[in-house]
Image 1 (cartoon, rainbow, N blue to C red):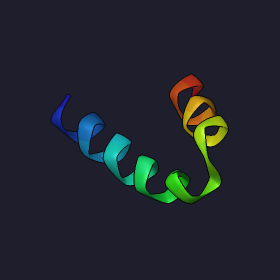
Image 2: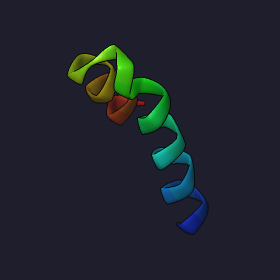
Image 3: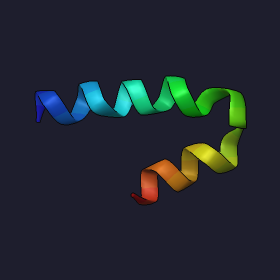
Image 4: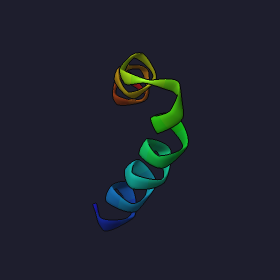
Length: 29
């Protein structure tokens, strides 16, 4: 669970520049 949170934070940082759509796509994955 902790690893998932870290991975999610990293993905969020990488997707941030792309916009909300990218965040939703990441959430779907």
